[in-house]
Every structure is written in structure tokens, then in C-alpha cells.
Length: 113
Length: 121
Image (cartoon, rainbow over all chains, first blue to last red):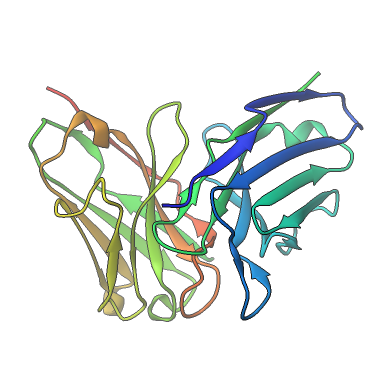
């Protein structure tokens, strides 16, 4: 199984500042035949199901604010929130869909400083 | 409205069984692979099982293989997760999730609100 490890486990950032969450996979999730990284990011607020933010490592889902961006390739990925808003307080998960079983990172809890 | 609605959760004794349902609306269910993802209280997300659009192929996490069965009735726009030999480790909110693109992708653009399964004596 591919192990996904996020860092940090929790993060406190001031409103308007940048937030950066990292995700590392135990093996590459880059599929060479199409040059796509099989990596996605979700946001989960308390009492709610996860919400898709980013797929193919860097493609923003429709309706997701452009302050959210994804980057990285192979085994190392980053979710960046360029200017933190109060409504961004949540737990963020990365997930690989390169192969089964699909696996998630342990989550990163983002709070306001 | 595009949505998924899970039902069937509840309290069950260790060793017992439960059948979850997920009703889909607002899209053509048969065009999409679907998954169940669970979340133990206060914990992270764990993929449990997936099923192809036609229902002829299923996949399971090792933790549930041989105990859970994922099926679908596309004519009724409904998915089912039959859970047998339940243990405390299966206690979680179970989410039904839709693959983001027709065929199968492995990432999910629509999630239900979840149904809580509690395994306890």
C-alpha cells in the first residue's frame, strides 16, 4: 500500500497570511504514460463530509477559490492557501489514487493564529 | 439536485451485521464508479470499498475483505454495503462517495453526509 504522510499535523496561521501543507507518498504517484500525478486534496470542516479541492495534484475543482493551489510531483506535494480566510479553518487531507487501496494522509488541522 | 444520501447506520453488537444504503440523485449513477469511505470518531479518512459503474467489479480494503460486500442497483439509483462480523474497529461514520469522472478515477467530487455505525455491546 502507498503510505501518505502529511506535515505538519496542525498549523496555526494569521488571517491573510499564507498556509502551506505538505504531503509525501511512500512511492511515486506520477503515471509516466500521461505525466499525471494521481494526487488529490480535500477540505473537511467539522460535522461535514470532505470537499474536493484539488485533483491531478494541481487542478482546482470548479468553484474552489483561487487562493487554494496545489503543486508537486512524484512523491512530494504541497497545498497552499495564499491568504488565509476565517472560513478556511478545517482539516485538510491528501489522497493518492495511483493504485488500490486508495490511501489518505492523516490530515492537517488548520487554525487561525 | 445532485446528492448522495446514506442510511442504515446504527448500534450493533460485536459479531453482528448491518446493511448500509446510499441513494443517489441528480446524475446517472450507472456511469460512475462509487466508493465507501469511513471515518472513525476523531480520526482520519479510510477508503473501504469501490464498485465499478456496472457493478461487476468490486475492490476492498484488507481490513474489510471477506466481511463486507458492496453492491449496487442502478435501476433504483441505490448502492448497498453489507457488513458482517462487525467489531469495534468498524465503528465509524460511513460516507458514500462518487468518482469525479465517468469510468473510474479514484478521487471523489460528491460525498454523502454519512451514516454512523457503532459497534458495541
